[in-house]
Length: 262
Image 1 (cartoon, rainbow, N blue to C red):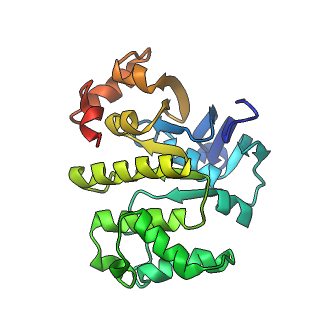
Image 2 (image 1 turned 120 degrees about the vertical axis):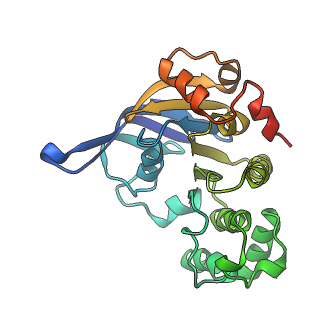
């Protein structure tokens, strides 16, 4: 269990799907803590359980056992409005996560209406500016936007409730490499400006090295190694699996993370 001051504290989290012989142990006894304002990465191959951890935090995956705390308070089984004011998630596919028949304005207005926040006009305008989009995008539909623009809208939707924590599930994996760097640098800047806490899931170790202070390596639902950014960049790993991830991460070199820097 992490310190009381941790913004995100995950203690022996287990997630299972199915029953009997068909039971799948997606996450087993995973522990980590993330301080306020820290960027923390979870890496692993497809099926390692990394995205399931984020979904469990949001109440989208069944928690079999363990304790999940946000700002020192255990999460209730049903996430309430207060949770979504504190924690927001940005998904992998920016097209699938936006309703195809809703304009950007509708997409950004909806959470404000649900939570009864005032000054929606000013909040929408600020959200667009914060993600580098002009007011001209406000009444466009997702099909009228590029992949990078759609992901900027998804980030704006997450930010509009002014959360303290962003859960980022492979936020750039569906984008071209040049656009990936733009979105990562945008997220970096927003973290600094707003003091956000990031929990980033990715299979790409160069992205994690660029974005995260520390990371957890997962394999088959279990945590196998914890590293700092410096240890990752120096390839100071103790597990063969982590070394395999380094090799398998396309184009990864000890300096590859620096290629993504502004």
